[in-house]
Image 1 (cartoon, rainbow, N blue to C red):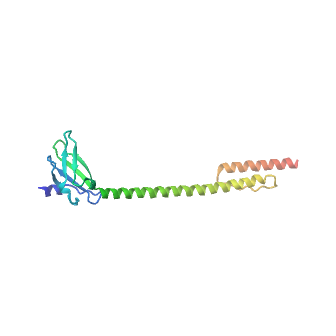
Image 2 (image 1 turned 45 degrees about the horizontal axis):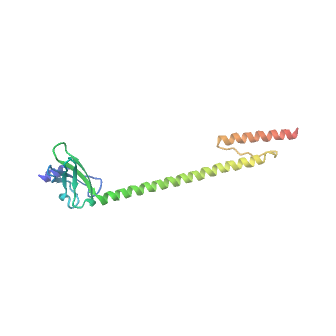
Image 3 (image 1 turned 120 degrees about the vertical axis):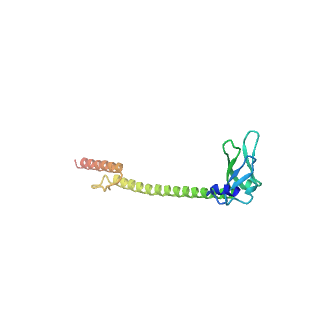
Length: 168
């Protein structure tokens, strides 16, 4: 009753044209899930002298499959899909990963540019303040960066010390 056995096998949902098949100890396909590619009935399982099983397809380059024995019965289960469907899925995944990588790189470059601008603006303000130490009131901006605020305080202190010395 191949139809009854075929109804018991779940339909794979990985790729279009994917299938699962059941093979008896003679290597003949007993049942296959609906939606199997044309010519799936021609598949055979052969077992070599070492006990290694192989799925033989009329056109092996058009089909990728995995084969597993069912205990010691000599029966096998094969799950397969057309090679072009698998390759299309791999191309889609590769394209997605490449696009994600490029977007991540672009985001990192944008962050580096914005951070660089912020730090450069702070450094320029400190250079102006250091240049204005000899003036009566140097303009020293406040910063959100703690280390730059410490440097600003040191420059203000140095400016006051220079003014006191000049007045004395």
